[in-house]
Length: 211
Image 1: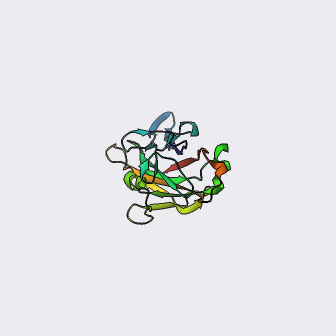
Image 2: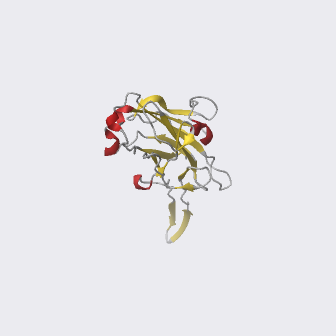
Image 3: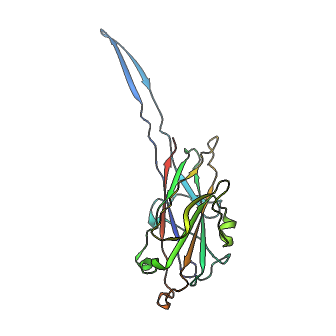
């Protein structure tokens, strides 16, 4: 979704954990006995959502979800110097998947954003619900379930310093959704030459199985 001529995207990377089996052979003269140990493959898959209801797998930059942006607490609107915009994405372990941990990369910055990047700062916090994120206020950085990933005011070259958990579900169900709020802010002294510039940073969330 393009909002006010700006795009904010996120990519989810998943993985698969393989567990191998073995065969033991016991021999006595011409007699043989076999003891097999078949093992099935466990699965690890992380999904993401923009609305808490519809989940998808977006494993490449080309299929990245385009976050719905909120400016001053309202969806849509143009981002102006000194102003901030927020975008929310929810991550979960897929039904039947193992749980794991997720790390957030520094954003890949396209050519249209490269000149603007020095005038942008951002913040990222995991464990934030969509309503809190979109309200546009100060994001919580501590408390139950909250993980501060990138400190407020960090440059666009900053990656998530801390991993956060996506728990395994029970009975084959999906795990609990963990919301991540990304807050971008423009420098108040941004030159007019950047007027109408498009934003297209792409963050990668890399997931690792906990088993």
